[in-house]
Length: 311
Ligand code: DLZ
Image 1 (cartoon, rainbow, N blue to C red):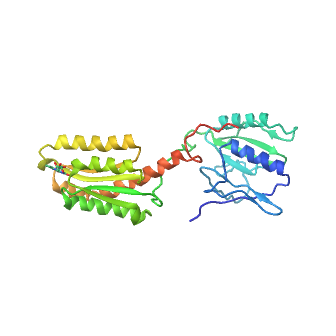
Image 2 (cartoon, helix red, strand yellow):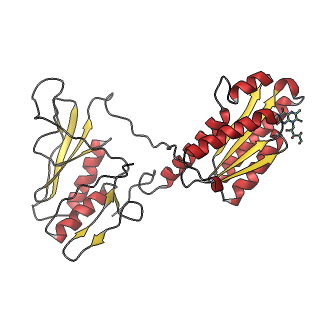
Image 3 (cartoon, rainbow, N blue to C red):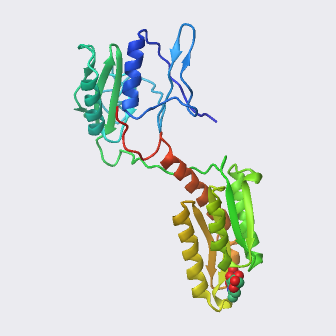
């Protein structure tokens, strides 16, 4: 699997290297630490790695045409690195502040924002002589891709607890198999998955809460089945189970996937446990993986939702 692509370009002056590095950091790029490659020093050269939250590589064949739907207005001489952004004006403001705070004696140049005829807005900056960067965004509101932080479905390096009720075991065991299938197929290790069995759905919140409070797991998957026709206090049990699981999730901060089926009949429950309507155990485990991934991204200094750093 490709993990990253590095463009290299030699810069003669160490001061220029620092200046560029400073600009990249001002824009939120993270200077290489453990996960994205450390900076290095050789006998004649040194390098600095930077990681961006998202990236794309575009190979363009052919020359820019001036007319027609396939024209590529970004391919001109005003930049050698193109960075697509979601809010061009705030990036411009950010860079303008950086230029004002980092005077270069007239060698650095910041262009104006221009609107192209092709639904793009852009500006170019030359922080050190000969090094152009063009920032751009779609002008067309429907073309700009909304940026979102969302979880991935890789469970590698995650630890889970599955709390499963024995009541209606013919169904809950299928839910458990579905959940394990999702976790292992997504890269979770068997030793990182703890299974806790409880008597019935009523006991799920208590066990989930206890394991969440240990801090030993990244997420909890709760599995059970409540059958309305066969459960005298169906509403009371259901309300308490859902409230307890939700409360445990909110108060511990550990994601709890809700895989407690509430069905009218056994047949309906079977359908949701792998027959006609998918396997809710599998789906719950996927939700748990996604939420752990999302939490990690929110907390990450690279992709996370953090106030901008001050320099
Ligand atoms: C008692 C009971 C009933 C009637 N029905 C269900 C059910 O449909 N699903 C389930 O998971 N558990 C049921 N239970 C058991 C309670 O959840 C609980 O385990 C017992 O009341 C003991 O506290």
